[in-house]
Amino acid sequence: MSDQKSAGTALILASLLGPFGIDKFYVGATTAGVVQLILTLSVIGGIISFPWAFLSVLTLILFILLGSDTFLYPIVKWKDVSNRDRIVAWIVLIVLVLFIIFSSMTKEKREKEEEEEEKK
Image 1 (cartoon, one colour):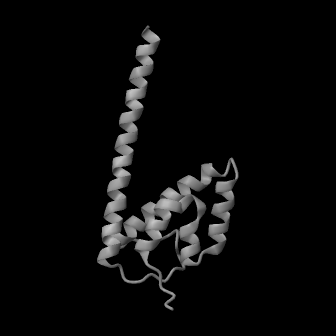
Image 2 (cartoon, helix red, strand yellow):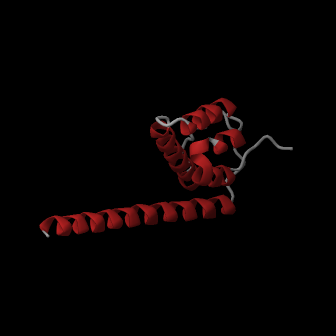
Image 3 (cartoon, helix red, strand yellow):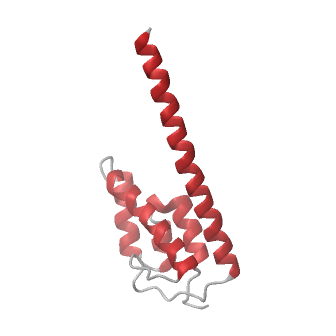
């Protein structure tokens, strides 16, 4: 079995289960995975763990699409980036952008509704 890891698989894991550190376990960074898991399971630790997971996703997207350094995964031996990895990165990036747009639209709608309620 090869010790090289797929960046696309790590990105999928980081996107879906990142706050639990599953992507860290996959790439062999067990200590980081355990720390992130413990943080997520503690009430206050989510404040650190969720942004950490978000940064992991962004780091992997940049690595796959632009070839940038994976500073959150310094010791990982990556397989060559495949077309599958690039497709996964684009899909995750598009979903992330749509989520941000939808969230901001929903927030604006709620704020308008609250203003209308206050006027009544």
